[in-house]
Amino acid sequence: MRTIQFREALREAMSEEMRRDPKVFLMGEEVAQYNGAYKVSQGMLDEFGPDRVIDTPIAELGFAGIGVGAAMNGLRPIIEFMTFNFSLVAIDQVINSAAKMMSMSGGQYSCPMVFRGPTGNAGMLSSQHSQNFENWFANTPGLKVVVPSNPYDAKGLMKTAIRDNDPVIFMESELMYGDKGEVPEEEYLIPIGVADTKRKGKDVTIVSFGKMMKVALQAAEELAKDGVDAEVIDLRSVRPIDYKAIVESVKRTNRLVVVEEAWPLASLSSEIAFHVQHQAFDYLDAPVKRVTCRDVPLPYAPTLIEASLPNVKRVIDAVKEVTYAKA
Image (cartoon, rainbow, N blue to C red; front, side, top):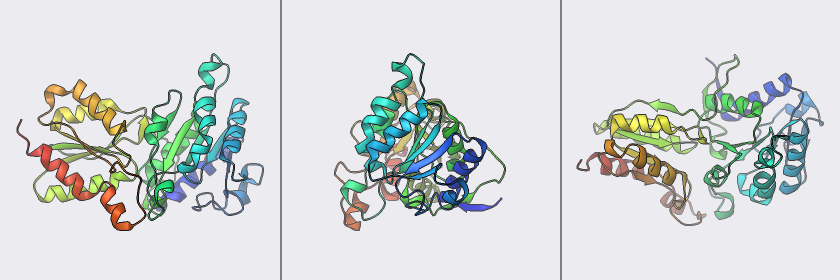
Protein backbone atom coordinates (compact mmCIF):
# COMPACT_ATOMS: atom_id res chain seq x y z
CA MET A 1 0.00 0.00 0.00
CA ARG A 2 1.30 3.49 -0.81
CA THR A 3 2.42 5.90 1.90
CA ILE A 4 1.26 9.54 1.84
CA GLN A 5 1.23 12.54 4.17
CA PHE A 6 -1.64 13.54 6.44
CA ARG A 7 -2.18 16.70 4.37
CA GLU A 8 -2.26 14.66 1.17
CA ALA A 9 -4.87 12.32 2.62
CA LEU A 10 -7.11 15.27 3.46
CA ARG A 11 -6.55 16.78 0.01
CA GLU A 12 -7.46 13.51 -1.68
CA ALA A 13 -10.62 13.19 0.38
CA MET A 14 -11.80 16.71 -0.46
CA SER A 15 -10.85 16.44 -4.13
CA GLU A 16 -12.53 13.06 -4.58
CA GLU A 17 -15.72 14.35 -3.00
CA MET A 18 -15.65 17.51 -5.12
CA ARG A 19 -15.30 15.39 -8.26
CA ARG A 20 -18.13 13.15 -7.10
CA ASP A 21 -20.52 15.93 -6.05
CA PRO A 22 -20.57 19.37 -7.72
CA LYS A 23 -22.31 20.81 -4.64
CA VAL A 24 -19.12 20.47 -2.55
CA PHE A 25 -16.81 23.49 -2.36
CA LEU A 26 -13.93 24.73 -0.19
CA MET A 27 -13.76 28.20 1.33
CA GLY A 28 -11.36 29.88 3.75
CA GLU A 29 -8.31 32.03 4.22
CA GLU A 30 -5.49 31.30 1.74
CA VAL A 31 -7.04 28.02 0.53
CA ALA A 32 -6.81 28.99 -3.17
CA GLN A 33 -3.97 31.19 -4.47
CA TYR A 34 -1.59 30.23 -1.65
CA ASN A 35 -2.54 26.51 -1.86
CA GLY A 36 -3.56 26.50 1.81
CA ALA A 37 -1.73 27.79 4.86
CA TYR A 38 -0.45 24.23 5.43
CA LYS A 39 -0.65 23.17 1.77
CA VAL A 40 -3.64 20.92 2.40
CA SER A 41 -5.46 22.37 -0.63
CA GLN A 42 -2.41 22.50 -2.91
CA GLY A 43 -3.44 22.24 -6.56
CA MET A 44 -7.16 22.30 -5.88
CA LEU A 45 -7.67 25.79 -7.33
CA ASP A 46 -6.09 24.66 -10.60
CA GLU A 47 -8.45 21.69 -10.83
CA PHE A 48 -11.71 23.14 -9.56
CA GLY A 49 -11.39 26.86 -10.25
CA PRO A 50 -12.19 29.95 -8.15
CA ASP A 51 -15.92 29.20 -7.93
CA ARG A 52 -15.27 26.08 -5.86
CA VAL A 53 -11.98 26.88 -4.10
CA ILE A 54 -12.60 30.31 -2.65
CA ASP A 55 -10.20 32.64 -0.87
CA THR A 56 -11.83 34.77 1.83
CA PRO A 57 -10.89 37.89 3.78
CA ILE A 58 -9.74 37.51 7.38
CA ALA A 59 -13.36 37.44 8.52
CA GLU A 60 -14.24 34.09 10.09
CA LEU A 61 -17.69 35.13 11.27
CA GLY A 62 -18.54 36.30 7.77
CA PHE A 63 -17.41 33.33 5.73
CA ALA A 64 -18.71 30.84 8.30
CA GLY A 65 -22.10 32.52 7.95
CA ILE A 66 -21.90 32.36 4.16
CA GLY A 67 -21.17 28.66 4.51
CA VAL A 68 -24.21 28.12 6.72
CA GLY A 69 -26.44 29.90 4.22
CA ALA A 70 -24.99 27.87 1.35
CA ALA A 71 -25.57 24.62 3.24
CA MET A 72 -29.18 25.59 4.00
CA ASN A 73 -29.71 26.11 0.29
CA GLY A 74 -28.46 22.70 -0.80
CA LEU A 75 -24.69 23.06 -1.16
CA ARG A 76 -22.05 21.21 0.87
CA PRO A 77 -19.37 23.69 1.95
CA ILE A 78 -16.06 22.85 3.56
CA ILE A 79 -15.10 25.84 5.71
CA GLU A 80 -11.43 25.98 6.65
CA PHE A 81 -10.29 27.86 9.72
CA MET A 82 -6.57 28.60 9.55
CA THR A 83 -6.62 27.42 13.16
CA PHE A 84 -9.51 26.55 15.43
CA ASN A 85 -8.29 29.29 17.73
CA PHE A 86 -9.76 31.64 15.12
CA SER A 87 -13.07 29.76 15.13
CA LEU A 88 -13.93 31.65 18.32
CA VAL A 89 -14.60 34.65 16.09
CA ALA A 90 -17.13 32.54 14.16
CA ILE A 91 -18.53 30.49 17.02
CA ASP A 92 -21.92 32.23 16.90
CA GLN A 93 -22.49 30.91 13.38
CA VAL A 94 -21.22 27.43 14.29
CA ILE A 95 -23.18 27.06 17.54
CA ASN A 96 -26.25 29.24 17.07
CA SER A 97 -26.82 28.68 13.36
CA ALA A 98 -25.29 25.49 11.95
CA ALA A 99 -25.79 23.30 15.02
CA LYS A 100 -29.34 24.43 15.76
CA MET A 101 -30.79 24.88 12.28
CA MET A 102 -32.29 21.39 11.90
CA SER A 103 -33.98 21.58 15.30
CA MET A 104 -35.17 25.20 15.08
CA SER A 105 -36.61 24.75 11.58
CA GLY A 106 -38.50 21.64 12.56
CA GLY A 107 -36.48 19.59 10.11
CA GLN A 108 -37.05 21.91 7.16
CA TYR A 109 -33.39 22.95 6.88
CA SER A 110 -30.21 21.02 7.47
CA CYS A 111 -26.61 22.20 7.36
CA PRO A 112 -24.53 19.57 5.58
CA MET A 113 -21.15 21.20 6.02
CA VAL A 114 -17.66 20.65 7.43
CA PHE A 115 -15.72 23.13 9.54
CA ARG A 116 -12.08 22.01 9.45
CA GLY A 117 -8.59 23.16 10.43
CA PRO A 118 -5.79 22.61 12.95
CA THR A 119 -6.27 22.40 16.69
CA GLY A 120 -4.07 22.39 19.78
CA ASN A 121 -0.41 23.06 20.38
CA ALA A 122 1.73 23.59 17.27
CA GLY A 123 5.03 24.51 18.88
CA MET A 124 6.14 27.92 20.10
CA LEU A 125 2.95 29.82 19.21
CA SER A 126 2.00 30.75 22.78
CA SER A 127 -1.38 30.95 24.45
CA GLN A 128 -3.69 32.38 21.80
CA HIS A 129 -2.71 29.90 19.08
CA SER A 130 -2.34 26.69 21.06
CA GLN A 131 -5.76 25.84 22.47
CA ASN A 132 -7.96 22.75 22.29
CA PHE A 133 -11.67 23.31 21.85
CA GLU A 134 -12.81 19.77 21.06
CA ASN A 135 -14.74 19.61 24.32
CA TRP A 136 -16.39 22.99 23.63
CA PHE A 137 -17.80 21.85 20.32
CA ALA A 138 -18.57 18.35 21.60
CA ASN A 139 -20.78 19.98 24.24
CA THR A 140 -23.13 21.22 21.50
CA PRO A 141 -26.13 19.15 20.34
CA GLY A 142 -26.40 19.20 16.56
CA LEU A 143 -22.66 18.97 15.89
CA LYS A 144 -20.44 15.98 15.20
CA VAL A 145 -16.78 16.35 16.19
CA VAL A 146 -14.01 14.34 14.52
CA VAL A 147 -10.33 14.32 15.56
CA PRO A 148 -8.26 11.88 13.43
CA SER A 149 -4.80 10.68 14.43
CA ASN A 150 -3.30 9.38 11.17
CA PRO A 151 -3.58 9.75 7.37
CA TYR A 152 -5.72 6.63 6.84
CA ASP A 153 -8.34 7.71 9.35
CA ALA A 154 -8.17 11.33 8.17
CA LYS A 155 -9.13 10.46 4.61
CA GLY A 156 -11.90 8.00 5.45
CA LEU A 157 -13.42 10.26 8.09
CA MET A 158 -13.21 13.38 5.92
CA LYS A 159 -15.11 11.71 3.09
CA THR A 160 -17.78 10.59 5.55
CA ALA A 161 -17.95 14.08 7.09
CA ILE A 162 -18.48 15.74 3.70
CA ARG A 163 -21.35 13.36 2.91
CA ASP A 164 -22.98 13.77 6.34
CA ASN A 165 -26.20 15.77 6.46
CA ASP A 166 -25.25 17.36 9.80
CA PRO A 167 -22.52 19.94 10.46
CA VAL A 168 -19.21 18.26 11.29
CA ILE A 169 -16.30 19.83 13.17
CA PHE A 170 -13.14 18.23 11.74
CA MET A 171 -10.10 19.02 13.89
CA GLU A 172 -6.55 18.31 12.72
CA SER A 173 -3.08 19.29 13.99
CA GLU A 174 -0.41 21.48 12.45
CA LEU A 175 2.16 19.08 13.88
CA MET A 176 0.63 16.13 12.00
CA TYR A 177 0.27 17.46 8.45
CA GLY A 178 3.65 15.99 7.50
CA ASP A 179 2.99 12.63 9.18
CA LYS A 180 3.05 9.70 6.76
CA GLY A 181 0.92 6.60 6.74
CA GLU A 182 -0.49 3.90 4.50
CA VAL A 183 -3.61 4.94 2.59
CA PRO A 184 -5.25 2.75 -0.08
CA GLU A 185 -5.93 4.18 -3.50
CA GLU A 186 -9.41 2.68 -3.69
CA GLU A 187 -12.31 4.53 -2.07
CA TYR A 188 -13.21 3.80 1.53
CA LEU A 189 -15.28 5.47 4.24
CA ILE A 190 -14.91 5.36 8.03
CA PRO A 191 -18.11 5.85 10.05
CA ILE A 192 -18.20 8.69 12.56
CA GLY A 193 -18.64 7.49 16.13
CA VAL A 194 -16.73 4.21 15.89
CA ALA A 195 -13.49 3.98 17.89
CA ASP A 196 -10.51 1.92 16.75
CA THR A 197 -8.30 -0.25 18.95
CA LYS A 198 -4.80 0.61 17.75
CA ARG A 199 -3.07 -1.78 20.15
CA LYS A 200 -4.44 -4.83 21.95
CA GLY A 201 -3.55 -5.37 25.60
CA LYS A 202 -4.75 -6.98 28.82
CA ASP A 203 -3.44 -4.93 31.75
CA VAL A 204 -4.81 -1.41 31.26
CA THR A 205 -6.84 0.58 28.72
CA ILE A 206 -5.44 3.87 27.44
CA VAL A 207 -7.97 6.05 25.60
CA SER A 208 -7.00 9.07 23.53
CA PHE A 209 -7.57 10.81 20.18
CA GLY A 210 -5.84 13.06 17.67
CA LYS A 211 -2.22 14.04 18.20
CA MET A 212 -2.16 12.55 21.70
CA MET A 213 -2.43 9.08 20.17
CA LYS A 214 1.30 9.36 19.44
CA VAL A 215 1.96 9.88 23.14
CA ALA A 216 -0.38 7.05 24.14
CA LEU A 217 1.14 4.54 21.71
CA GLN A 218 4.72 5.47 22.60
CA ALA A 219 3.88 5.11 26.29
CA ALA A 220 2.38 1.68 25.60
CA GLU A 221 5.58 0.55 23.88
CA GLU A 222 7.68 1.74 26.81
CA LEU A 223 5.34 0.07 29.30
CA ALA A 224 5.67 -3.20 27.44
CA LYS A 225 9.38 -3.22 28.31
CA ASP A 226 8.33 -3.28 31.97
CA GLY A 227 5.85 -6.08 31.40
CA VAL A 228 2.72 -3.89 31.33
CA ASP A 229 0.48 -4.80 28.37
CA ALA A 230 -1.59 -1.71 27.48
CA GLU A 231 -4.58 -1.64 25.16
CA VAL A 232 -4.79 1.68 23.27
CA ILE A 233 -8.09 2.97 21.88
CA ASP A 234 -8.33 5.83 19.39
CA LEU A 235 -11.74 7.50 19.73
CA ARG A 236 -11.47 9.14 16.27
CA SER A 237 -14.58 11.18 17.08
CA VAL A 238 -15.51 12.87 20.36
CA ARG A 239 -19.14 13.51 19.47
CA PRO A 240 -20.43 10.89 19.30
CA ILE A 241 -18.11 8.98 21.64
CA ASP A 242 -17.92 5.21 21.26
CA TYR A 243 -18.59 4.46 24.93
CA LYS A 244 -19.29 0.81 24.13
CA ALA A 245 -15.74 0.23 22.88
CA ILE A 246 -14.26 1.87 25.98
CA VAL A 247 -16.45 0.00 28.46
CA GLU A 248 -15.88 -3.37 26.78
CA SER A 249 -12.12 -2.79 26.92
CA VAL A 250 -12.20 -1.76 30.59
CA LYS A 251 -14.19 -4.88 31.43
CA ARG A 252 -11.22 -6.88 30.09
CA THR A 253 -8.34 -4.79 31.48
CA ASN A 254 -9.99 -3.47 34.68
CA ARG A 255 -8.09 -0.19 34.52
CA LEU A 256 -8.36 3.04 32.53
CA VAL A 257 -6.15 6.02 31.73
CA VAL A 258 -7.52 8.81 29.48
CA VAL A 259 -5.05 11.09 27.68
CA GLU A 260 -6.24 14.47 26.37
CA GLU A 261 -4.43 17.63 25.30
CA ALA A 262 -7.12 20.02 26.61
CA TRP A 263 -7.44 21.56 30.06
CA PRO A 264 -8.76 19.30 32.85
CA LEU A 265 -11.94 21.11 33.92
CA ALA A 266 -15.11 19.95 32.12
CA SER A 267 -12.98 17.99 29.67
CA LEU A 268 -13.76 14.99 27.49
CA SER A 269 -11.62 12.89 29.80
CA SER A 270 -13.88 13.96 32.68
CA GLU A 271 -16.92 12.78 30.75
CA ILE A 272 -15.30 9.47 29.84
CA ALA A 273 -14.16 8.88 33.42
CA PHE A 274 -17.67 9.53 34.74
CA HIS A 275 -19.26 7.25 32.17
CA VAL A 276 -16.90 4.36 32.79
CA GLN A 277 -17.16 4.63 36.55
CA HIS A 278 -20.95 4.60 36.15
CA GLN A 279 -21.16 1.79 33.58
CA ALA A 280 -18.24 -0.42 34.61
CA PHE A 281 -17.61 0.39 38.27
CA ASP A 282 -17.62 -3.25 39.37
CA TYR A 283 -14.91 -4.07 36.84
CA LEU A 284 -12.47 -1.34 37.91
CA ASP A 285 -9.52 -2.43 40.05
CA ALA A 286 -8.28 1.16 40.41
CA PRO A 287 -9.69 4.68 40.00
CA VAL A 288 -9.69 6.12 36.48
CA LYS A 289 -6.70 8.39 35.86
CA ARG A 290 -6.64 11.39 33.53
CA VAL A 291 -3.58 12.92 31.86
CA THR A 292 -4.37 16.40 30.50
CA CYS A 293 -2.73 19.73 29.83
CA ARG A 294 -1.83 21.67 32.97
CA ASP A 295 -4.54 24.14 33.94
CA VAL A 296 -2.73 27.17 32.52
CA PRO A 297 -2.62 29.06 29.21
CA LEU A 298 0.05 27.32 27.14
CA PRO A 299 3.40 29.14 27.50
CA TYR A 300 5.76 30.13 24.70
CA ALA A 301 9.02 28.64 26.00
CA PRO A 302 9.58 25.06 24.74
CA THR A 303 10.61 23.83 28.19
CA LEU A 304 7.38 25.15 29.67
CA ILE A 305 5.36 23.67 26.80
CA GLU A 306 6.87 20.28 27.59
CA ALA A 307 6.03 20.75 31.26
CA SER A 308 2.43 21.71 30.46
CA LEU A 309 1.35 19.11 27.90
CA PRO A 310 0.71 15.40 28.38
CA ASN A 311 3.87 13.45 27.61
CA VAL A 312 5.04 9.86 27.61
CA LYS A 313 6.41 9.99 31.15
CA ARG A 314 3.17 11.36 32.59
CA VAL A 315 1.16 8.64 30.84
CA ILE A 316 3.53 5.92 32.06
CA ASP A 317 3.32 7.27 35.60
CA ALA A 318 -0.49 7.27 35.45
CA VAL A 319 -0.58 3.72 34.08
CA LYS A 320 1.77 2.49 36.79
CA GLU A 321 -0.42 4.11 39.43
CA VAL A 322 -3.52 2.22 38.30
CA THR A 323 -1.67 -0.96 37.39
CA TYR A 324 0.01 -1.33 40.74
CA ALA A 325 -2.99 -0.13 42.76
CA LYS A 326 -4.54 -2.67 45.08
CA ALA A 327 -7.80 -4.12 43.83
